Length: 403
Image (cartoon, rainbow, N blue to C red; front, side):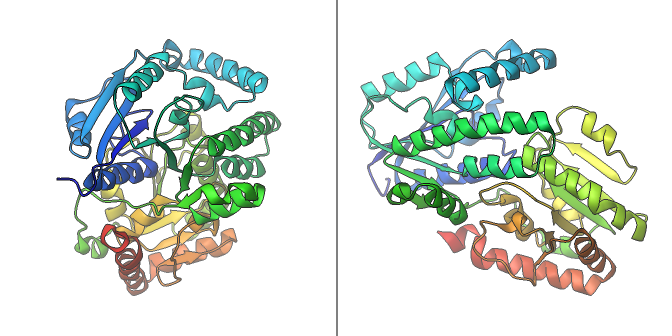
């Protein structure tokens, strides 16, 4: 029996499994938490082939799973057509002043299914889980408390990426997108009864832009329940002189952060420690990045099912983030696996508890590299930092600590 008979309709733009990103992990955990107390129906749009075992995994964490299958667009399957599609979306974004992701989230079949579902059944709460899915209920006459999120401040995200971008064409496109996102975020908050964010910093920034929205905003910590156990012995058996960077380079802020590290910090490290090795874990967008930053000591893994093997084998976790909003769930994961962390201030923004015993925060590239070298050269210092990271995770970021 559920602790509460309230019914929740969760709406997502794809099956939230496998857990490829930090946001995937946070939303997967959220669905599981809600289903422990409420009757959760999850409806998702799926445009690609999915494995039966992935469907089964999601069915375990909700009362009902509804998958609306729609044939994927040819624009998504061909790189040349993708560029044409992007150009079309930019033009439409300029004309209609809507973000490109909103314009692209236009499945009539999915919208019709949601409308019919809400007409036939009574849901106490309607909760789109992302910007992509709010578009399907915004403006619709649907009964139920509209609760949106949790999410990141996408306006702040675009602003920070704009500040970190020099290319004139990219800056122009970002300005077009920023204007559209501001309008959309205002509409998004106005059309919801409540809206929640993972980061208190994001909430404060939104209130600073428009104090009227203060009464609608809620904070929800980015809780991640991990599927596999942590092996403490991995702290003592790491690969010598190895660093790990996690995050798909298809994301603008991950790519900008990786470029910053490889341009400004990596040369200092390779000069000092010739056999230093860097794992870049996550999907890359084409081969241009790899070609530009090719080095025998840099290993690109591509998209992986789990980052755990790379976190466990690496000596130091790096977070050279220079733009972005929300919380960096990758930091929470690194703490969970007992990794000493070297980060920029931006890399830990939004996190609610950090200390210097586990996370070394540096702004200057030279100091950043020195801290990495110190951790790699001093085994006792590295192990002490590792144990402190795990302790910090257990006290402030573990599932048990937050529930």
